[in-house]
Figure 1: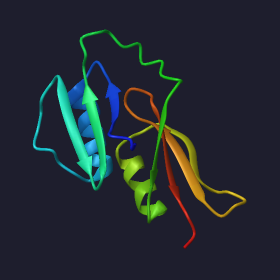
Figure 2 (figure 1 turned 180 degrees about the vertical axis):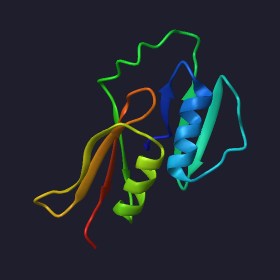
Figure 3 (figure 1 turned 90 degrees about the vertical axis):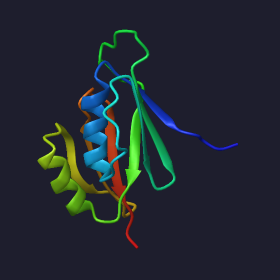
Length: 115
């Protein structure tokens, strides 16, 4: 068994999808207001409005992306205007992590590993 996709439920599919398209540097060719699938390499990320109202008080999920160039990604996140939780910080085990909120306040982690 393997994970097929991560789905984010939202009130504003276009805004959230546009944020992830910029973050992942990809374009899915869609401006659909109900459902967009964003594919970056082998990861499928779906942004969907199922018709229910979301409170954007998401505290039960986070998404972590592994990146090669933390400084490049950090600068991109700043340009996107995302609210930072933690700037890039080296961990005792050698990884560098940072975290921020997406437009719906889901917690996003970027991490890189010393190679």
